[in-house]
Amino acid sequence: MRAPLTVVALLSCALLAGCGAAAAPAAEPSRVSATTPQASPSPTPSPSARPTPGAAPSGRPAPVVNFGRRTGNRVALTFDADLTADMRAKLRAGSVKSYANTRVLDVLEREKVPGTFFMSGMFVEEYPAFTRRLAANPTFELANHSYSHRGFTPRCYTLGQVPPPEMTADVARTFTALEAYGGRQTRFFRFPGLCHDPAALAAVGQLGVTVVDGDVVSGDPFATNPQAVSTAVLSTVRAGSIVIMHCTDVNAPVTDQALPAIIAGLRAKGLEPVVLSDLF
Image (cartoon, rainbow, N blue to C red; front, side):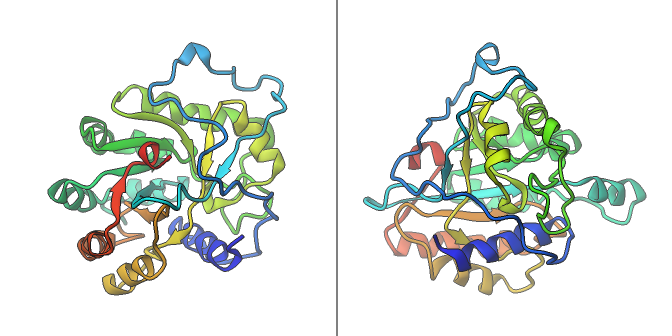
């Protein structure tokens, strides 16, 4: 479904981590494009109710969602906060000042627009003030984007791969990091590079997550033209859409500049941005 968009999404997410387009990722299973996810995430999950990382697979893979209801006028703006080991090394070496694009938050807060943020665990650890700001805003919600933005399939571009026995623990580690901040917690998960296969879905399914891909690709990684980003979003968005953007500065430097036009364009179309929990 939407193969061309999926390819662009994979390229964008892989590029954001500083990797070029390498071999195509392993084939994905069919995705759920239903009006409602098969498993509803809890906004305030109970740690005691979670399966133990490393336990035997439950046999129920995580459901995958591309978009919400096509009726009505709701859309979801989602933002990935990537941080890899290589990116962290650049911070330590001083070659990059910061990967936290707080200007994205400035725009959303000024315009009173909700957003769902898919956080990598390394990003949470590196930017506690950024994460606290997200958690303190009731119009934002927190979601999981793995720990170090490695791939979950053997050929997810050049992202490397989380060893299969460690996949469940990798995702659980980020949930644990996020819990300390409170706010609107969810059980949404987005795979790095959007790469997943049956084994990966089974591994994260142990944690009771709903995997969220998306149907609108902003193309903001390494973009230099904000208008091109806003046009990419507004030309394809419709009711129920899940828009994929980033709040990772340096690697996605013009997202905040594109946001005002995106927000104005959505309003002109009669579309209302909501968090993913409300979209579903």
